[in-house]
Length: 337
Ligand code: ZN
Image 1 (cartoon, helix red, strand yellow):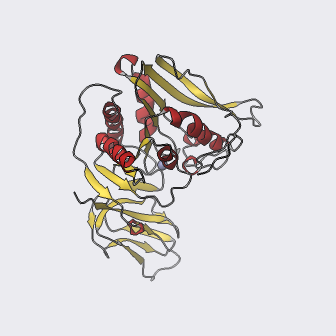
Image 2 (tube, protein in one colour):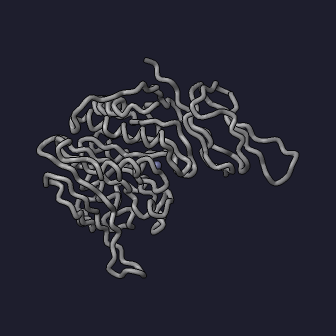
Image 3 (tube, rainbow, N blue to C red):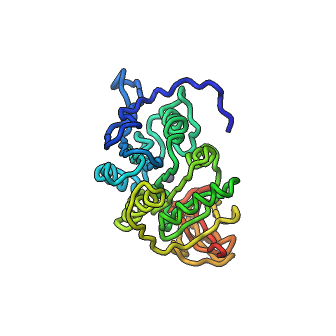
């Protein structure tokens, strides 16, 4: 994406020194003038752990505010990670879009901003755009490997997976998929996006960073299992990057592809969802994934939504009532080895 040559400086001030060895707990202070605080700020918590020279990992959660495995695992890691364990640098931001995280919503309650559709951001934009701009111009350039922990939020649920995208640079794609394999979630996906414009993923990949994303669960909550996956996966990627020592425990993972847009199934009607296939179950092309019942009157036949290709149900709409246009189901296809 083209960028203006001369952007004004970011208004965000980090309270840590990224070049100093040791553990620093601080924040990214984003000035935000408002009715209840004329010269107030949004204080986005962060930690830097650095020892000597070595690679830098940038670890983020709360890109969407209603996804919890990332914040749980990263607030914990920030508390327990010691300088002695680290070679290089670990930058931890457990709740990137902090206003959204505080509100428990996908997007920011301040400006409606979806951080993961706001990149490259603007230093003179909304608070969400200012956060994106700071990551784009200051944090991503410092990083060798980036792990951004997502799950489905309140409206989607997924089988636990880690993903990297198909990329033009074959070597960069290979390095990203190796980091995905190191995370060793139950499923590893070479991922297709509905619309990659404005995503943090795209920004990191365009800068040549090794970028790993996850969808570890969903429904606007976390489970003991999915938190454990996040906790172990992050340490495993840090080991893979040479930042943490010790052996890497890699449980088996199922490799999936998303070869065409037929992987996504959208509802064309409003109504009540009857799930017909469970997450993680195999599906055949033409098989009914879900039925949607109109709720205005009795006696109406439901609309049936079918799989467009053979694969595994990896994601589904989570609430019981669906609207026309909502993503009902996502299918992954076992990769040919
Ligand atoms: Zn998300």
